[in-house]
Image 1 (cartoon, one colour):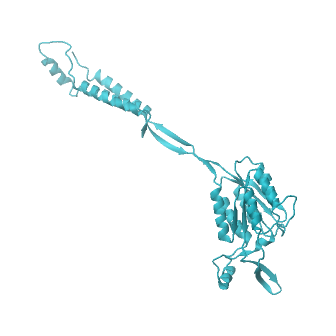
Image 2 (cartoon, rainbow, N blue to C red):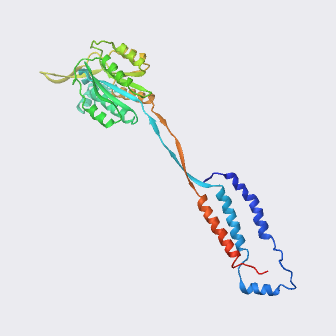
Image 3 (cartoon, one colour):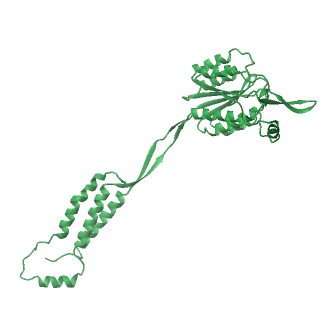
Amino acid sequence: MTFAYPWLLFLYIPLTFIIWYMWSKKAMPALKVASTRPFIEAKKRGNQHSPRLPLLFYAIAAIILVFALARPRVGSEKIIFRAKGIDIILAIDLSGSMYALDIPRDVKTEQQLQNELEEGKIKNRLDVAKEEIRKFVEKRPNDRIGLIGFAQMPYNICPPTLDHGWLLDNLKRLKPGIIGRATGIAGPIAGGVRRLDKSDSKRRVLVLFTDGTNTVEERITPRQAAKLGKTCDVVIYTVGIGSNNALIENNSVFGRGYVPAGDTFDEPLLQDIAKISDGKYYHAYDAQGLAEAMADINKIEKTTVEQPKYIDYKEFAPTLAVFVLILLLLGFLLENSVFLSIP
């Protein structure tokens, strides 16, 4: 409980002295007579109660009145969260090389590898990326997130939206090679930047996932696309997926098997793209590396949250004022009826 005007409680100091004085004071005679014995006998026969009862009511009323004037109240604090989200576009490589399986660094022997493959614990690059993207999206409910898939050409799969369920449904349907086997990096960067440039968000981010080198000639180069992002205040994070210790499935007349995946992505290019746009480059060697990269991006790109605080008070003064009036009225009625004295 708190008080709106706690300094009014100091009125109890003079009030204490006033009540003590009124309680201890003897009434002056209204009329001098030779003997008061007849009046005393009449008083005994007419009333057995203390004549100070009205004064007691007045004193309690005064005590409660001071308490009410100080406005006692109980506050219920409410904090309202208002989140200002970030607009993010995730551009994911759908070229055929995303079928490759990156072998975890803790797999040391052929037998371990065989067991992991048979149990399905090692997933292809796209499936690993989809899982980490899903976790990333679920951690950012206040951000508008869009999705671009690219191979030879970029395709807008989902515009930036708060409907993350719809975004994740579209993400699940993606497969390596469904829109071509080449890798064009400039297209998804330029397309994502153009879409984010229309956004009214103060923070705009593009995250590019790829496991290959740029094999598509376009009107602008990937570095020029990154400069476009810089001009439009779009921060670009690049994630290079894959390692030299990777396998890709090979079906031949001899049956199903795995062969080395071959060359990996163009690391200097991805580093330059991130540097030009004030972003950051990550090398995701395997599933663990990709998880660490996404966790770091999630940590860097903080959603702004406002926390206005409101306190809803319940006031007791009106109820106490009613008690004061009742006590004053009772005191007045008793003083002028039951305890009415005869001079």
